[in-house]
Image (cartoon, rainbow, N blue to C red; front, side, top):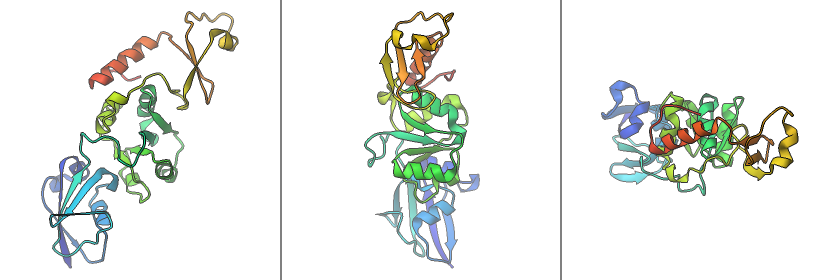
Length: 245
């Protein structure tokens, strides 16, 4: 039987049982295995890992673990920007993160979400469209085709949006009110005259500024909810808030 020692750093310990956090883990193995498979066998999804050092030398996920290897596994820096291979940040979210999807769209981020996506679909979309997969399912992140992903730690929808913005350093990229909250389509300005027939005659439109989704044709205007959304955005940009959209 061969043995290798593992040390996980910072937030990677979130994925370990309490007795294995912040300590050296002696892991026994009998079969030839890649370091990626061993890391995930210990509970840490590979998209959360940024750097692996074996006996002081950097290796990639294909490295085959040897007897008596001393392995140190580091997370992606909390101050890191978007993954280097991505030209722009866009997301796909699992079924547990519907409110987070709405918040990301409100802030202008390209965000795919449906409550009927299967895990296989989510992994495929993330891989083929180079979207960051946000999930509360650790096993989903371990699928081999997922290159970019993040396990959302908070279970509170009111905290998740700030967590994601911090993780990917996106506060300066916020561009509110440009995407449809319902379908993620881009909004375009339209005249009041061009959409007035879509409302009941008794409906009072006090505003003269309107936008329409280019995909689903949903109409948006500055109604009674607008001030609340503005307040939410301001609180998000400050990194603390109490109400979600």
